[in-house]
Image 1 (cartoon, rainbow, N blue to C red):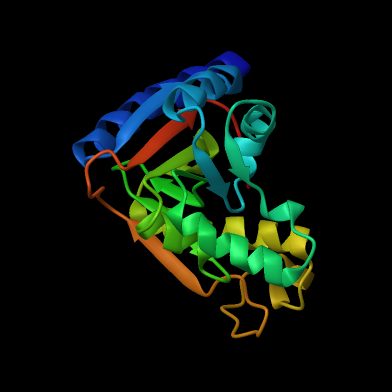
Image 2 (cartoon, rainbow, N blue to C red):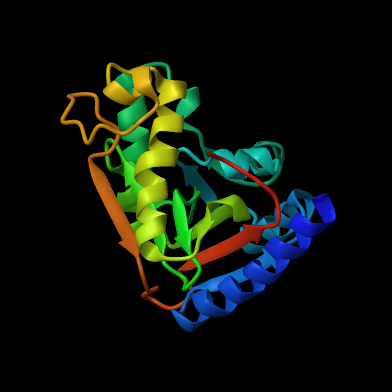
Length: 212
């Protein structure tokens, strides 16, 4: 069964790589997280300032540990002592050499959907950092853009809320209520359909289930 899933992910991954490249993204497919880590480090120059927001997939492939133990300048918001320091560092991420993120949904035709509470992550994807590096497991891929948006709102967001446990309806029910809560984590939704300038956003698709 595992071999069938690997083959399924590989075929869809290769199709998605071509479609991403047709939209001016850089993209590659890696069968395993070990291969993905190697490729990510090839795309991050030594000495680079690197920021990230909610990048569970990057963490799962070992990229954060590699950055902290290598010749890089990671900008880790979890190292901040106060909320003020954390907010200031998140603003500095917009000027990072490289910004790491995941995808809440990816349509097979090459469009990415991300949903955000404070907007720091979607802001960095849209503008600021010189390079945006997206690490995405093939479990994030849907057949259509509509399904990718639905996945972001009804799968990724309620799952993330189980980590945050804020006072939102989906914390209790596990289901999106299209809420207007003060602590809502679904305030900004961005669809990234093309890359400009060409190659600024780079995708590493991983033939495993990663992130939420």
